[in-house]
Structure formats: structure tokens, C-alpha cells
Image (cartoon, rainbow, N blue to C red; front, side):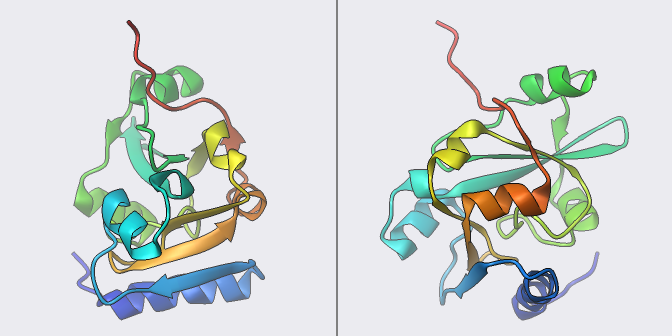
Length: 162
């Protein structure tokens, strides 16, 4: 496995943002912002201002589901959308192989994958997601997120079936 430093992952995302003219800001922290809870504390914001990019795999295909920081991805819904059984969460090694970024730092764009964006993500004007490493976050307008990912807006979050 490639053992790049956090700075190398962060720089790779910064180059992607600059070369594609994306209006986004990368925020680098001294400590981990790997989890939604850590990121919310570091930003002084609500978990609902954050997004999670979950990498899923099924039959050799890679999917990324983007949900609000307060939601969970439903692999069953992704499977129904693509006509496969529910895809499984990628292992940390597979996440790095398919996105080029480590778990806890996966940005919502900058790699090839079919992207599904939950509509709740677009409820916020600005969202914060993985910034390339477990100590970096990306601040981006939700409209730019949609444009750059070319994502499909569809309900992909878990719902409780009572």
C-alpha cells in the first residue's frame, strides 16, 4: 500500500481543486478531524453542516454515497438504484486504491466513481467534507459539490422502519 504522508494527500486534493477551478477551501487542523464528531468540534459547527463520503463496492464497481453528517448510508438503497445486491463498504485498502485518499480524509470528488448525493446534503448552502487526510476538511458550496461530482441526487440514507 502506498504510504503517502498527510501533506501529500492534502496537496493532491489542492491541485485537483485548483486545476478544475473549484470554489472550495481546504482547512488543515493540528489534530484529527477523521470523525464527524471531531470535525464538528474543530469547526465549532453542527454535525449537520458536515458530509460523509462513503465508498461502496459491488461486482467490481465503485460507488460513493454522500450523506449529511447526521445520516447513515443505506447500501440497500444504493443496490436498488444500480440493480445489484446491496454493495459493501470498501475496506481501508480499497478506499485508498479506488479514491487515492485514506479513510477519514476522502473528499467528495477527485477520483472516478458513480456518486449519489442525498438531497439533505443540498439543504445546506455550504458543507464540510473530507479534505484529503484525517486532519483536513474541505469547505465547499453544495451547488459546486453537485456540479463537480456530477452526482445523482437521490435518497440514499438509512431510514428507520418501525
